[in-house]
Image 1 (cartoon, one colour):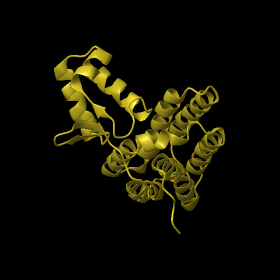
Image 2: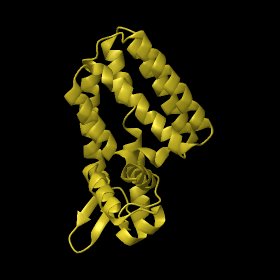
Image 3: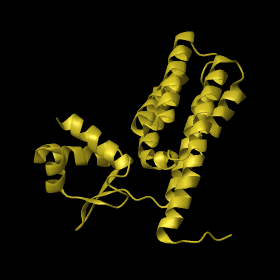
Image 4: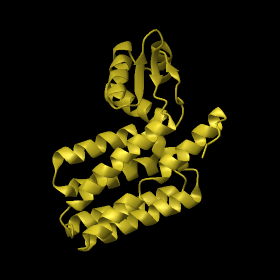
Length: 216
C-alpha cells in the first residue's frame, strides 16, 4: 500500500494537484487516498528524499517551490551530468537497446498525440533511464536519475504546448539516430539540445505567477 501511495502522491504533485508550496496535512492525505497514517508518513519521508517535499519547522510538510534561479542551477547540473554520460557512451549502442528506445519513443509520441500526459511522463522517464544506462558508469547514471527526479515538476510545465511536444518527440528520434551512429559529438549535442526548454518555461510561469518583471 505504501508503494502505491508514494506513486499516486508523487504523480499528483508532479501534475499540480498539489501545487508548488502547498501544505500537505496528514489527515487530509489519509482521507484522499484511503491510507493509514504510517503509510502517509512513510510516503512523505520518501518524497522528501526524492526532492518533491520539504519539512518546514512550525509549518509541516510542503511541496517544494523552486525559484527560477534554483531551477537554472539544477539544469546546469543536469547538462553537466547528461552530456558527460553521452560523451563516454560507447557508440553505436547495441541493436536491442536501439529497438527498445524506438518502441518507447513511438509509445511516447502516441501518448502525446492523445494528450495522455501522465503516460507521456512515464514513457519519457523510461526512455531516458534506458538511454543513460548505456553510459557504462552506474554512479553517473544514478546521479542523472536523482537530478531528473528533482526536476519532475519543472519538466511538465510545457506539456500543454503542442509545438513543444512535437519538438520533444523529434529530439527523441535525433537521440536514437545519434546513438546508432559513431559521431560522439553529435550524440552529446542531441543530449544537450533536449534539456533547456522546460527551465526557460518555468521561469516564465514563475514570473507570471508572482507578477515579476525580468530585468536586463
